[in-house]
Length: 217
Image 1: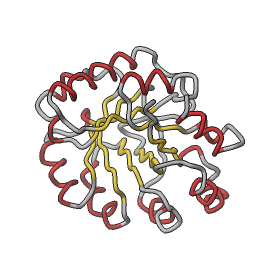
Image 2: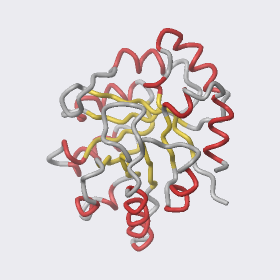
Image 3: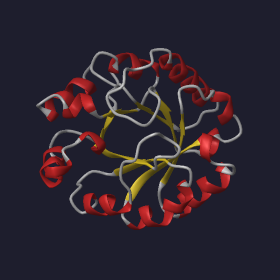
Image 4: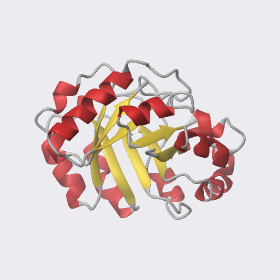
């Protein structure tokens, strides 16, 4: 049975005790730290940027996975690379020249990903899917943690996996939004490789158990 990687979204952690939270997550069985970068323009919320990423990076024993929900993702490439970010995803809806940005991300030594909002069709990836290292499917509308999973995103994940397989690509599928132990197995069966979890893990009271529940759903 396939087991996914789990990317834990730091946005739902207790920022007042961030070092303790990171220390707990380092030994929780998680695979990645997911960093939700929001600018208050592309999404109706403002989260954090370079200063907090810089604070997290030396504490983290897991790779950093930055999800840029901003109108100018290219402005973060150099600084995030220097801080050790491994995965860098930007929204297809915000970038006029995604091929160029993917090349910049890869040249900076990071894995390049494209994120799609729930209403953005997979057809927008037709000419760029082979260039991306991963695709991030939003299963809620981005901007806030704790939203309910949009069930028809399962079909979107299935169709994306079919396209990846048909082209014999190694592109990974991330799924972000409303992921819980109740829908994790369905997402894995649909083709998801990495599940992003926020409120499910941080609201559980036992991070290791919650992550195990997701991996073994």
